[in-house]
Image (cartoon, rainbow, N blue to C red; front, side, top):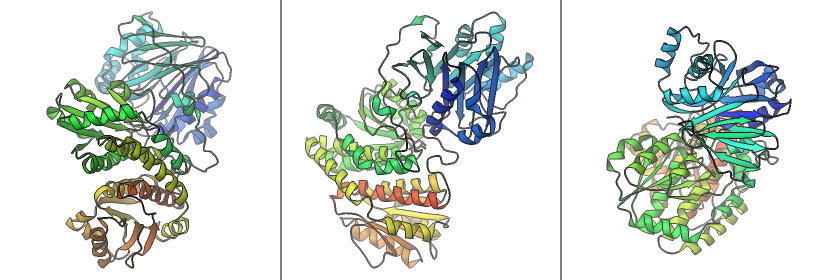
Length: 592
Ligand code: G6P
């Protein structure tokens, strides 16, 4: 959700570095982008709408001269996708430039007040109030950091922003509240960014800014202050080498690379601390109530987790959509254990609910992929997915690893962690062995249905959430409307939408749900549906059969998901869409 980067160097080609770092954060937003540099005492801003490469072709962002600058890739919230609304934004004098991630909730009132006092606005964004407010402070003779420290407390909402000014040309000042911002130091170069992934391979020290902290960067130094203006020491950490890998590894898209590396990432998911898993599992069993909170794909993994907890650990838990969790805060107490699932650890909907739960005394356990995340900071215990960077906006390997973590956790409830580790290793080999199984069938299905407007995905029991995840994958990257639901629910409304030729994808492994699920597929077929079955058992009612290997019933979700990811990927490619950057979406959603 918007990527921001600041770079102070002694290198005249700083804009090329900023551009490359922005590319690595493009998954956070790609509606428009821009860079501001201070060059020979002047502010140069270039920006435009479209993906970064397109903007660069038109405006040569990476060729702006200067040693200090800031860059932004936008996911529009306030104000449409237009050039004036593209960051960086400036003040009335054109001497200050600001980039921002987050939302300033009180921007309307601040903007009205600034206009009354003679400021002129060039955009419809909430962000633009920041450079104008800094302008007022600089006019009073304050330094850039004093200006930032004075105005930040007056901004309501969430923000991470960076500011530069021609009056102090070697410096970048940044602060954060509710949105991520990290600082990295390399060889005579200082960075600030939304995400450490942007800085991979360029830094040897990483600093995490706390809520309200302010960073003042020059090429050789980073100085930190708390929100009261007191200088503080922030402990440096070493950047993690795994998080430096961010190329496509020879694949056309990150999504395909990330799908294909799932056998390897599943093995990494099983590399866990047995004691930690056992202790978290016991906490879950002991808790008066367990609430799982998550969004998007992470929520679908939680629905599979709920099933595993019930069937293996005999523990019921409730899964609440993170954006709705705050409305249930009244029922949270110190007897509650909240399990928060988030690949990024930065999803604001998740974080806000967790903050409320923590205040109410709940124990917080998180399942996260990214190291050093805001959610991690809020949690009593963190279990890591270990799948390394996931760049494609649509979750793939992180989803499979979430399933693996839930599997390990549920078997830890019955003291069978080691057995569960063996099963995950075994299933990773089955994923690897069968990854190419359905190539021709998937190609046929894509050819036959890629022009369809609607798809329905159905399944029962542990696989119902996989139907929903498969439908989510299809709609988010191929823009085909798709719905996933429990197979038994189809007849309670959605069946009226089935007509001749409507594709209905049914996950029906040969387990205890097979007969009933098949019955629901037959009901759809009788109304003209085309049946695409994902199963280890053939049946004459199928129009298409996507084969699964035979596995234990609790492991079908992992093998079925792989096939649904590939189907969605093929559809997106056939329809001419970039699956890594679906329109209107972003990987890490740090606004409400
Ligand atoms: C966004 C992404 C989804 C993701 C969801 C939750 O909406 O586009 O792919 O599942 O956020 O993200 P998280 O990082 O919290 O798992």
